[in-house]
Length: 356
Image 1 (cartoon, one colour):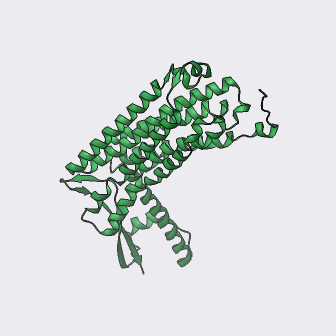
Image 2 (image 1 turned 120 degrees about the vertical axis):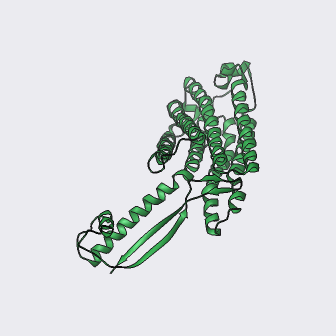
Image 3 (image 1 turned 90 degrees about the horizontal axis):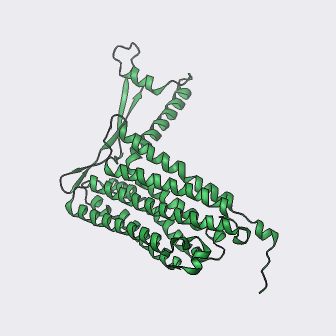
């Protein structure tokens, strides 16, 4: 049988730089968002105790970061992003072994993120029926994770058949493409279910419609992660490709970003207030500085000094206040359960003093 020949241009094609970039970017995003969440809860005046959902998101972040590191260590250095014909047998074996490790971290990161979101739901909503639904969903996620780990651990006999061609020739393995399709379809359906679960509770709150819509958007923004899951589902066929080191690049990138998107969405409801306050503070500072520079023709001064002087009765420089505006802010996302059917929320108020 004649051996196929490949042009130097074909063998030189490489997407390793792309893989390295998209495996590296999620790491600071995951660590930064989770660290910001923990800092937001620990700093005054909140100083809240860490809850079970916080510990789960820490574990999810560690697993997601480990997944990306496994991809960086075993992926591009062993041929991911190049054609299989340009990869040595030893590199291919190391790549498949790394892919096996990568898959374990992926499953744990995905499941831990789901469980963290469910734990948050359980903590902030006291409705008994809703909590039962949360517990049933959490049990399903745990069973899903156990099933994935069992199949990954026992799907090939011997286990080396996952990455060793010689062992695969004499051993037996599950259909990797069919297995991956089924597990990711279940994963996508679970994501959709989890992110729409709180919407009926939110719509039943005694609040204005715009507040309800804001809360629904805040909790269902994770549906964007479902788009990554759907895109990942569309490229799973690459698992069975003969040129696996080249065709699996989109699947590997999406597999690294799916846990990252889930972690960002899980952290958002708990860091939203701090982010909103920071943006408002920057906006107010910039607006105040521009107004003084234009109207007074003097060097801008810190808005905090003006606030102190305005409230200092001993000051000799009194400015009459002609108008005080109080504006309601968005609904606070740090919530606590109330009774059996409600969620306690806080509202932010912004005061503006207009001087003549």
